[in-house]
Length: 97
Image (tube, rainbow, N blue to C red; front, side, top):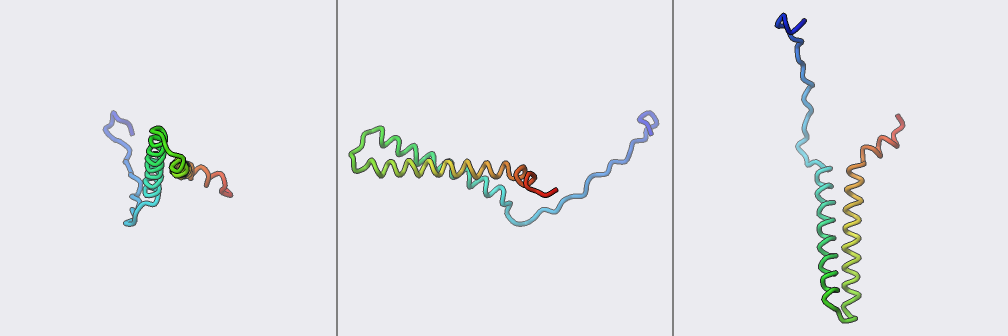
């Protein structure tokens, strides 16, 4: 078989995979992790803005708590995104194959 003879090898496509009708869990978790980062950034930014404008001592604890909550949400979102992106690598590392 050569191109000069006009004969080409027959192309066979792989069988189509079944698509599930349910939601894709990976996409949902990726959206949640992104949302956690955005919400955490908002909490942290608003508390830093309030602290920059000057606070009375009574409001300082509340603003620091909101800032720490923002940091916690950002770190949780980053951790979730890292687990999602490295999930296949981690499963391959711990598999018994």
